[in-house]
Amino acid sequence: MALMSLHRVLAAALVAGSNDVTRFHSDAGFTLTYPVVYRADHNELTSTKLYIYLADDTPVDAVTVSTDDSFTERATLDTVTQRYADAITTAYKDLKVLTKEHTTLAGQPAFRAVYRGVLPVQYSDDTVREELLKVHQTWTIKMSRAYTLTYKALARDYNRYLPHARRITKTFTLE
Image (cartoon, rainbow, N blue to C red; front, top):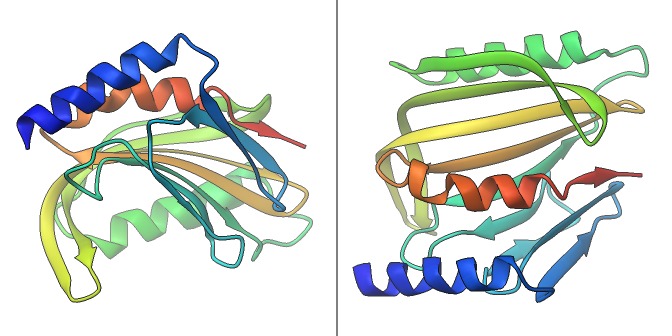
């Protein structure tokens, strides 16, 4: 497995400088580009529109893009941040927020939270395990729709895949 992961990292590094990419355009109003070496799932009918796997050996290390249409036209970034921050901190025990700050995403005001904790991970239809994860989430709102980019990884893998996740998330654009 370690050799397969090393192979994946080397392949991604080689591809990162090339034009060998997949450009994903969502009906939800965003576009994201990622190297073709990464396997991805997409479904316009769910809140998680795009799930990009950064490792072959685990479904955890990934970049995801989700949307949320439950906000009103008067919702602001503060409205979204309050709801999401409350949901994150109350849903999981022993969660440690490492960073929270205002930023931008696709030229829009955004909020970023990085946290670490033991979270449930679904490995298959009938296998869920508690794992120590580190999660980096950035969200923004445009025209009543919240967009959330998430990079999540097993805590031991976080720094290994962070440069790949950053390259991918920098390609995120809104219409």
